[in-house]
Image 1 (cartoon, rainbow, N blue to C red):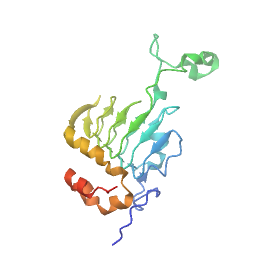
Image 2 (cartoon, rainbow, N blue to C red):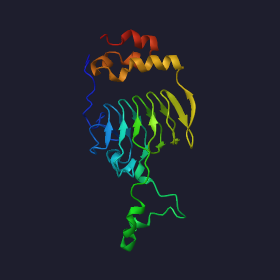
Image 3 (cartoon, one colour):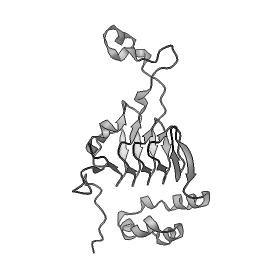
Image 4 (tube, one colour):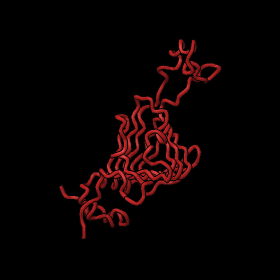
Length: 214
């Protein structure tokens, strides 16, 4: 039996399913950082993730996505470039239209940002979920289909709705602490390969039992 781990550098892990792409070998922007084995699934144009799913990314804020994240079709990250001025009567960005209006470009530069958008490891995003700028999503979280995430999501939290609210956490506080201490996503890929059944369907005690010994 083949005990080698999956190759994290292959763009399409399922050769007969081009709709699924690993994001780490796909992205080229220095402002996007994705961990190994995180994937995106889209039947239309999965390889256009950087332009279709990361929107208004004019910098310098970064999008960071951890390892082993699963992104369903239509998941989108709204970046700080979407911000408009709101302290006057109109929110319309006149200067970007050009002409003499461009003389007022200072009115739309230096708008307050919300910082980097950071997604932890082992996060599952449902169909057409949306993440707003500067949000931090914890490890092991689940983002329900159609959710609009405007606030930070705790580790192992399940959120849904618009705006997304916490439905529940997957584990109690003590068990979450145990899982974070284990951080299985940082284990060598060979060790993960050997213990996939425990990682997917075992208990926390089982996971502790097979954790690599330092």
